[in-house]
Length: 341
Image (cartoon, rainbow, N blue to C red; front, side, top):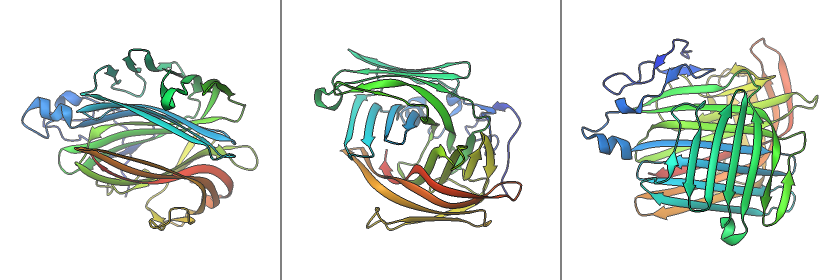
C-alpha cells in the first residue's frame, strides 16, 4: 500500500515527527525546520539539517548541472558539465564553513541564493518559470562558468516524498522532471545555447539524515519516439519506504505511480548494463551507460562517493490505464551514493 497525502498543513508536529508519511504529486506540506528535535539542543538540530536545490539540464549533446546546498555545518555549491560526444567532464565545488553566504527557501516555490565575493548563485521562482543564474569566474581552475537559464514548470505533476528515517529523522523531497528550458551558459570562453529540446530536472530536498547514508537514484527527462516528453524517477536505499516509494514515471506531465523497483547492477563495474524491474510488472528497463561521473570528497567529518552513470534507457512501462509504452533511447542517469555527513 502506498499512502497518497492530500491534506495541507505543517510537515512536522511539535515533537519533530512527520505528521503524515507517504507521497503526493504536489507539495502539500509546509517545511517547518524550527520543529526539528532530533537532539535536545537547537543548534545541534540546525547543524544536522540537510538542504539542497539541484538543477540538471539534459540535451542530446551534453548535461549541465548547478546546485546550492547547506548540510548544516557547511555550505556547498557545485557545477558540473559532461559533453556526451567528446566525454569532456568538468566539475568544481566550493565549500564554506557553517554555510556563510547561503540562503535556501523553505519551499520549492521560494528563492535560494549564495553570494561570496564575485561568485553568485541565484535560483528564483516567478510564476511557472524558474530562473537559474550563476556567475563563477574561477570555476574549473579559472575556466569560468556563467549561466542564465529560464525553466518552465509546465508539467502538472511531480513526485513529493515525506519519508521517515527512524522516529525523528526524515526526508522531504520534490523531484520535477521534463521542464522545457531555454538560455545559455559560458564555459571556458565557449557559449552553449539550449536548443528546443532541452529538459530540466529539479531535485529539491530538505531533511535530517543518518550520519552514514546510502542511496540509489535513477532519473531521466527526455522524449519518446513520437516526441512526447517522458520523465523517470526511481530510488531506494534510504529511510522507511513502507509508506510509499518515489518510483514513478511521467507522460505529458502526468504521474504514473509504481510500487517497488529493484536496482540490479554490478558495483565492481558500474559501466555494465543496469536492469530495473518493478514488483507490479509495470516497468522493465535496461540502462546502458556511456559515461561514468565519479565524485569523491574526504573532509574529515564529511565524506562522499558518487558514481553517476549517464546512458540510455530501453524497455517498457505500463501506464495507470494499463497501456504498454515502449521506451527507446531515453537519455538519463543512474547512481550509487555513499555519504558520511
